[in-house]
Image (cartoon, rainbow, N blue to C red; front, side, top):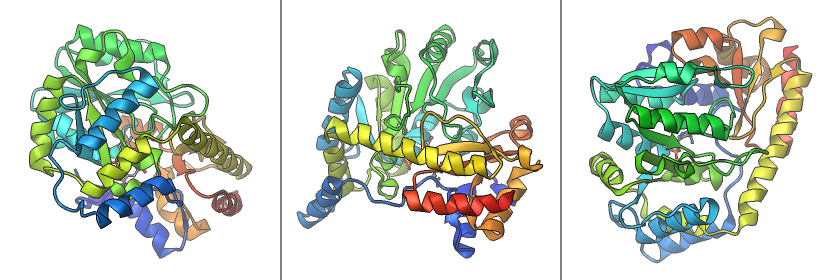
Length: 382
Ligand code: PMP
Ligand code: GLN
């Protein structure tokens, strides 16, 4: 649970964001957009506050949000979930992930993740007392090597924690890999917890929810969040769907973590989930164009740009510039050139950190002119 340099509780995102602030750098580190979400949602939140929706929501989430989540699953994926027993709202995806892992795992269990892995996964697995095992996703394609998944599953694998589209690599898992995960989860009787917060932010390959695959529905908990899809990362409204017995176990833990989450934001997110299809496709198309602007800037600066098919992020290799320690570089980058990025090694255990030591993750969820300016600054690296 120790953060970089052994600072208890300081995440890499906080550290780099603070450095960016200190040096007036463009913050392409922590993944948050620099423009607000849809006006309908902002108006709905203001209206909910004005209408007095300012006290505790039910622990399970406002009925209007749970119904909107169920309608969203049906509309985009043909998945049927019962809003009363198969959906809970959470304080961001982060709390849903924590509640699921704490509900399902403990000492003696293994939780399998894909490395590099999002930082909260390692911390919560640590809190649960379970053992953290990983399957490596290596550059340039960031997919499991042949045979790696079979080798990673054991009969102690209680949960396989999937993140698709994948942060930090931008990989969107193809159907065959997802099906293999489902088949192995069935073979080893593991629960699949799948973090799909970037479900609408893919650039080409369609997002395939794990829960839609044959053999998955009975053992899959799907987690998402309003933060990324609707550019409201500060609202911290997430949700979890899945079979009633698993959802009920997660809800018990959630009850004692936060009990409930921000009432007016929940009803505003319900409005967002009901926006027309064009909102969702438009958000992905804009983000794809932003990825291309930053990708061109990184390439012009002499970095190796790795493919990103989804999320807010692209990874870049600093090795062509002769750099071997991208973590050290990330700590100096804001002061050196006025741009902040996150080292990929912080999302890894020791072996993975060695394999990714020259990689940086850049967020492109910023205005076009900000990305152009960042590109100009990056050119000073060469
Ligand atoms: N999972 C992944 C993969 C993320 O990138 C993030 C950051 N949005 C989260 C979970 C946390 O989401 P939230 O802010 O909704 O808690
Ligand atoms: N999910 C965001 C990212 O990966 C940041 C979340 C956080 O600050 N913990 O950059």
